Image 1 (cartoon, helix red, strand yellow):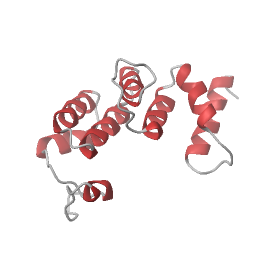
Image 2 (tube, rainbow, N blue to C red; image 1 turned 90 degrees about the vertical axis):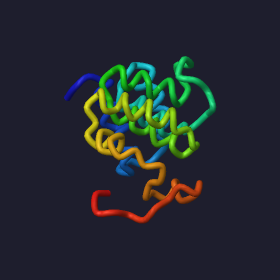
Image 3 (tube, rainbow, N blue to C red; image 1 turned 90 degrees about the horizontal axis):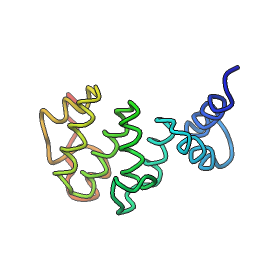
Image 4 (cartoon, rainbow, N blue to C red; image 1 turned 30 degrees about the vertical axis):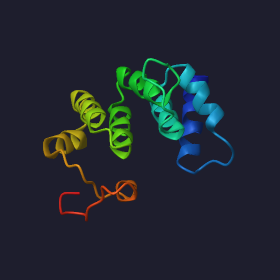
Length: 136
């Protein structure tokens, strides 16, 4: 059946995917404190940009950095998109490079092109949107 933390991880994944009712934030915090990379990544995404640095362990950037160090390249990619949405292109490239070094293929393509306009809705909201292209 697995360890209790593995069972909690499955329950948290089910909650994040909309397959379980209730509030899973407590589960995410529980697993993040136990250093589960996917829980740290999801928690950093849900916290959003809180204006705190990566040196603070439970800030969005801190959780993303720690999840990346534990082998989750999605954390770095999410942090890169968060920087893009704040118009922090230096941070955007930095986190994309970290995601590429961790093995994220989408980040590699995006870093190679380095577009300052992206097709997602949040980019349009900040005036950086563009139409979708064949390679999106």
